[in-house]
Image (cartoon, rainbow, N blue to C red; front, side, top):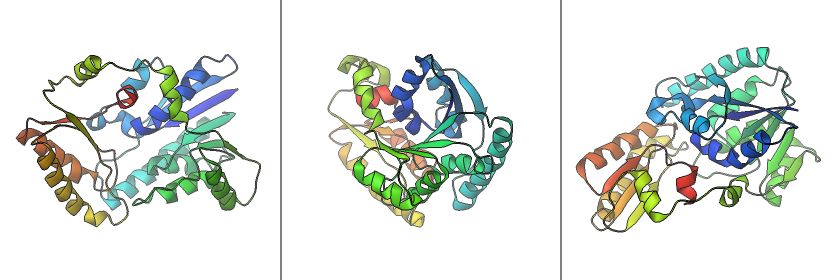
Length: 280
């Protein structure tokens, strides 16, 4: 069975990881990874290298994201993704199943481009709700375009069935990423500090912030409040900040974080924290 996996960022890749290992090690499946989105952008850590370092072959690379994160620029990237995947699906419509995950705009664009080609999509983490973001719209677009739906909780199955209007295509499988706890060799404290390449002399706090995509014009105010909070914490703690993904007005936060790091030795930025470090 020929299975393709769409991965557009470090976020979905970390969730996919146990499944990718299972597919790679099962002779019944022919796995092809399709990497696009921030995986191919150096400013977001060029995380395609993480996929390759984990022992996976990336069969297809699609450089779809355009520069900028304003609503207009996000829309342009969405349109460009549809165009590029239209060409891709026209040449590669022979997969038995194409796995897609989550709720990002570029994932929705890639999936929507496959609708006229009748690509058989299987959507992981369908039916969920994200507050303060337009992710729900993209997630539900993907759900409606998919033929199979894998959800983490029974109530999400109910939501999917309400959306699509019928039953029989949805399975409750739990949270896929939790399988990483069984398969990853977690880092010790010393290994963790060494990986971060920073000398920690007192207690560590971690900051992980996603910009709002609903009421995105308020992001500058949110960035100022977050900056005040981090400066206050930095007086007593070491702060490790993971940089945001490619979302509307996300550059506001990235600029603020870099300025904080330059001004304060207690603040360190990490572009791609990685699945192993998160679980450790």
